[in-house]
Amino acid sequence: MLSGLPKAFDANLLIGYDSSDDAAVYKLTDDLAVVMTLDFFTPMVEDPYAFGKIAAANALSDVYAMGGEVKSALNIVSFPEKEMDMHILKEILRGGAEKVHEAGGVLSGGHSIGDTQPIYGLSVMGTVHPDKILPNNGCKIGDKIILTKPLGVGIILAAYRLSSVPDETYQAAIKSMETLNKYAADVMKNYSVNACTDVTGFGLLGHLGEMVENGISAVINASQIPIIKGADDLAREFYITGSAQKNANFMKERVLMDGVDFALKEVLCDPQTSGGLLISVPGDEADALIADLKGNGVPSHEIGEILPYTGFDIEVKND
Image 1: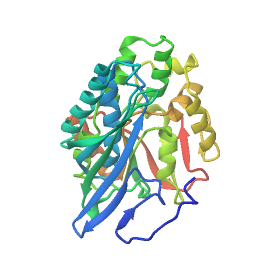
Image 2 (image 1 turned 90 degrees about the vertical axis):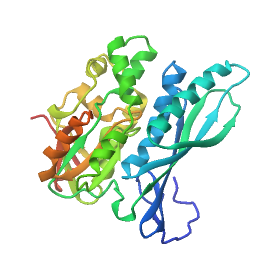
Image 3 (image 1 turned 60 degrees about the vertical axis):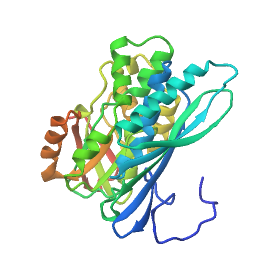
Image 4 (image 1 turned 180 degrees about the vertical axis):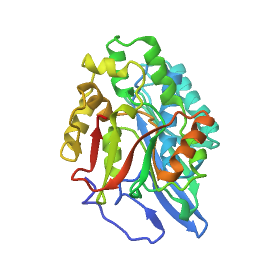
């Protein structure tokens, strides 16, 4: 899609749109680089305050996935001011501002337009040492793969739109989406992490696929995949999304999933909003990292490992 865009070389642009990383990184000095990202979308929940928090957490996450720290953010807003109460917009912005402040950043302004539906997100600036950037494709053979949030958000939201999800399950999804990846990132910095990304619209398999595009394989243990309670049951009842099917079609030639049941396949392709970090860390540090994450209140699960190429980029084993 971007192949026809004009390009200008700049040696200080360490990561740009030529890669599939989570954010752009530009070096200012030998000790300092800025991390730049933006994200926005239409509401996926009815509560405007919750929507603001979720959209902000989602946008802020890309800085954490690159190993950076959030410094400032700008609001991106579209709102139908003639059709909707302006109090709704105030609540969206309140939720977003609270998450920026929780991240340790400063909300510095933004831009708004009138349109037919609400849209909200952030343009975020962070910082990182140029030698401590975490690309998404730096996995090494022997690494263990750790996931910091359970899956199933897209399935749950699909069921919610049809008034078919238990409140307990829905509230668990909301809590997960509102949670900043800051706390996982703070712990992760104390370990020799080789690669990191966050799990969002391409689902677990799609984002994991970006991590293993250089002649290695990720072998995943199906029984270790964390799932929001009730999401797999909803998948069995066919509360699934078109985006999940697109993700599955895109990855089908790259993934081996023999013996994996229908519900888990859907969960693995399910698009996530404000999903967790997917961390590739040397095997001898994995147990300590997981214990440290859990000790700091971050749910974390070792879901697989990086091996020499097996014939597929990803294998999901039902051991």
